Length: 113
Length: 262
Image (cartoon, rainbow over all chains, first blue to last red; front, side, top):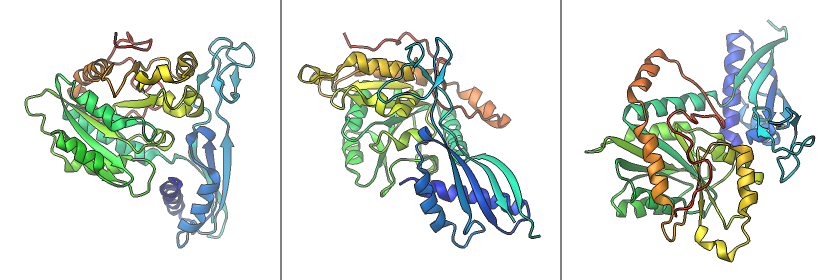
């Protein structure tokens, strides 16, 4: 349920960039969301439609790029997506370490007119 | 004016929250107070843990901010024991965020009395997911896990275990009655987090809490008040997150293996 304040923040950032570029409205928003950022794309879309009413973001298309979390094996360097209930590297069996891949939560690009 | 343009934004959505959190942390550092963000699922014994730690503090004055969806039962409970506790109700929100904490700490008069250091415990909403995503100005993220929840929790809630600076494994007095697989639990913890000490504690018997209190006071004593004031003026905020957050700066890792109190 915490996607609500987060979506407000997204609209705030998009509106700021839209105004700074002297544009009238935002047509599209490209959002990058890592699966372990904890944010659910579908919920953001739902709130986006509600909160953006009456703002320059109203009616904007939301494109969400999801990123699967990857672990890095400290022994062989393999980058991998883990299996459920395990952190083991598929190549050598050593437990992988967390990386920043999969924690993304940023606005990459907006389309304005 | 009607041309369609693409603008590269590349802006983190959590930046504003993180920026406010950084200010809260600097503000509290300047007061000589270590901020501890306590998180854990409902029923793991978060308030009981605080009582157990606070009664074992030697050098630091405790303060508590209680986060609850509603009710102020825990705050009343702590106040009755003479502990300075303040309530935040989120009315439905599943976590505390930095603006809520900033607002609250500005309301509190932090009088350390005759103590050199303070410890501000912020008890987050009972939830193992959302609180891990929002920094609130803490120096230390303290995770409470329990043997009753089962040994698979690091595998199911990796972010909380990855971000923790200290992990308490509570209710260890119940181990004889459960099938808790400690080896599997620790394997998961260490895959995610190489450095956080794991203390085995029992809210029922008090076992292990003296060590936890000593560890926290060690971190509080190591706060560099002047350095942070300097950093503040230089506006050189460092926004560090994740597993390497502050680790190893002020303390030696003599706690690499998990503890038992004897």
